Length: 116
Image 1 (cartoon, one colour):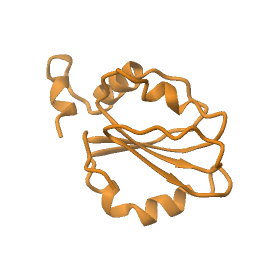
Image 2 (image 1 turned 60 degrees about the vertical axis):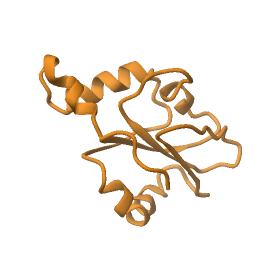
Image 3 (image 1 turned 180 degrees about the horizontal axis):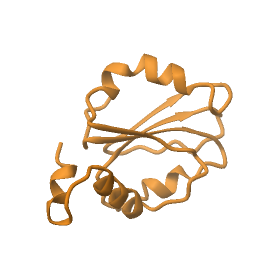
Image 4 (image 1 turned 180 degrees about the vertical axis):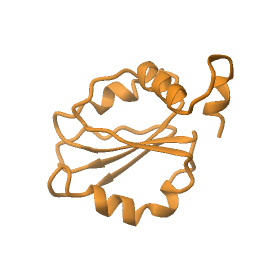
């Protein structure tokens, strides 16, 4: 597993029609890492800083429990964790703003929410 880049981890089971590429658009600044668990071999597998990917065959939702158990040590290094459905359409900027909001930081202090 790669070293974490952020305090916030987004976990998703992704398939061939997944919108995960929107979340990690090339050239975008993110304040969150992603752990993508592909449930189909037909998934475009991204790479880059703060992106972890695995292949786990099976139904979309069925693998979540296994992910949480098998990757508990890695997940526990994050302060915040979210499970996203792969159908969610959102830009890195939208997700980053949601992360800052969820961290509870006041607008002037929100940069501290993203520091590793």
